[in-house]
Image 1 (tube, protein in one colour):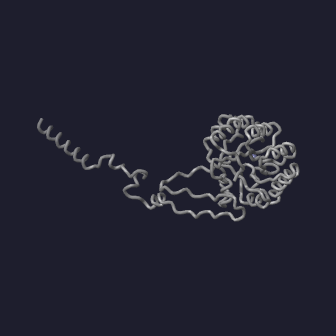
Image 2 (cartoon, helix red, strand yellow):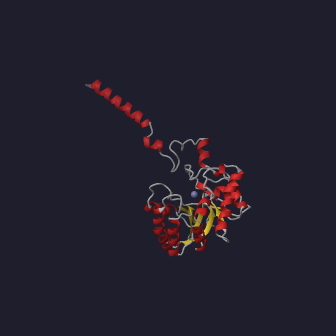
Image 3 (tube, protein in one colour):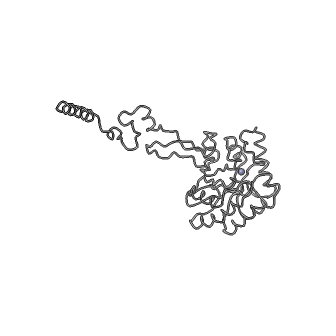
Length: 296
Ligand SMILES: [Zn+2]
């Protein structure tokens, strides 16, 4: 009995001694808030580099238009944020084009710009115009040349109702930014001339690249023809098959901020859901105190 008891005590002392020499597991993983586990005791050069972002040069203000707000860097909080997925394919480091692509043509205040693309459409454009008239709000119509040629009377109605015009190229070639210069000039120039021809005296203030596929060449070509490149900041993807009016409304509210440029479509397919969404959205935005204006 005695040797057995003695051996048991010795074992207990040994086990206890080993356990006491080890720090408790919770003490080993405790770190400062916000610092990844395992980096508190000995920060590596890599960790410090991630935690201390290097300053980026501020984009310079474009000299050739003066209309666009240069993208400003948000104040650094010292926290590491994961990279955000790009909303559109990144094509440029040019600040003007980058601002257009992210719809940063913002205007202060509770103000919103409604933009309607890919028309005029004989079925949906008159429905949209009737709604805008009913609520006495104005929108920007991004017209495709071939649609303008087919429905010139709708362009005249858009102008007569006081809406703003945007050139959305002649044929809506999504790959326009990769085309040769002469093709680019034709797509933009022919559409502008056609709109001005069917609605004499109308001013085409804006240009929007098909599919939002911008390049510095497209923004420059638009500016050379005295049109302001127009992006967007709210995209409820109303063109997607099966998208419901309720989903469009929900997405707009989710993305909306004062100064937003909202992208919707009155052409290019069945736009019944878009019209139904507008019937809900316009009175909602008016009740929330928003004014409808041209993109800044
Ligand atoms: Zn389009």
